[in-house]
Image (tube, rainbow, N blue to C red; front, side, top):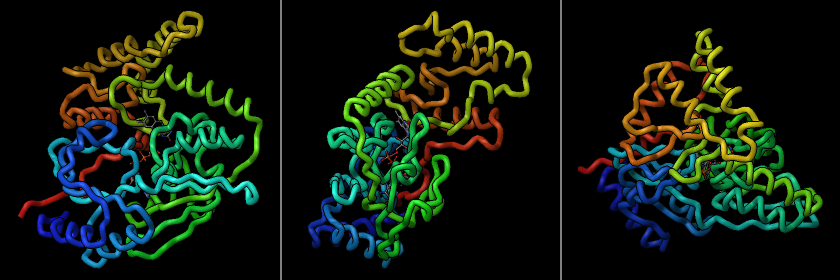
Length: 342
Ligand SMILES: Cc1cc2nc3c(=O)[nH]c(=O)nc-3n(C[C@H](O)[C@H](O)[C@H](O)COP(=O)(O)OP(=O)(O)OC[C@H]3O[C@@H](n4cnc5c(N)ncnc54)[C@H](O)[C@@H]3O)c2cc1C
């Protein structure tokens, strides 16, 4: 929690040091999911010195703040006024050192850009990240991945600064990566990633291109591109079967309907659409929504059709009540880092 006077003091320090910032940001316009109230302050350091100055000041005053990437995994709530966010959007360089066989990427650069630069340099291992929205920092934080490969598979070292102001370096082993998890996500708020080194393995340009093109097309088939969305809600969970796992009748009907509606012969190259299946699930469990909170392509993904964020929380709780306890919420609901007007 941060007070209005604290914000004034932070702004004074930032202005003196000529660090860029924005105030009173409407998160519905700013965030990837187009949700949320107001953020009082977003700070945009342009280099390591500015970043360090900001962090050391916040640490000395014990002020709370949260680092953000492209916010593609964050659910900001409509009724909340948030305090201070740190954005590394100016940490956006990606460089290739052919002699060392290393790509060094700054935390604010996009994963799709990293993937495309790797294609230009004929480097393989980054093809699968082309369609993951988000930054290098956000991707490393949660060990992003798609179709098998994850960030950890091509990472050498992560660099950054702790919330205490101390620099840090962590090797892939020290990052303790697991499925959509890392040492940094387990210690959320304590480590700010500034850049990372990746293995640059030479590949055949055409093969890299073909793989990226294929995965790009696949993604358009099963991912909502029209309404604002977040990534998968419950990571690694096949929610259609999991929500009715103890109900034999539901399980049997689901199997038949999936065969019927999603047979490759019928569907061929049409975009994946699970509307009928979603309708069946809602009817079966007696779920009614004035406006659907999930994607027509999968119920395991929030879709913003303009409703209040309370409706998304209700939907998440509804799913949680039906899913096994082991199902882990992958989207991050931002409920702290709040602002208080004195
Ligand atoms: C349409 C869509 C498709 C997606 N597909 C995939 C997919 O295929 N695979 C996948 O893994 N994910 C996927 N996601 C989820 C998400 O995009 C990724 O996980 C992405 O890596 C999040 O990055 P971000 O920059 O948006 O992070 P944010 O959402 O801004 O932040 C996520 C977390 O990372 C932390 N963080 C961000 N930057 C830093 C930093 N520099 N230092 C320390 N911590 C930091 C934040 O504090 C926050 O806790 C998808 C999301 C969407 C909307």
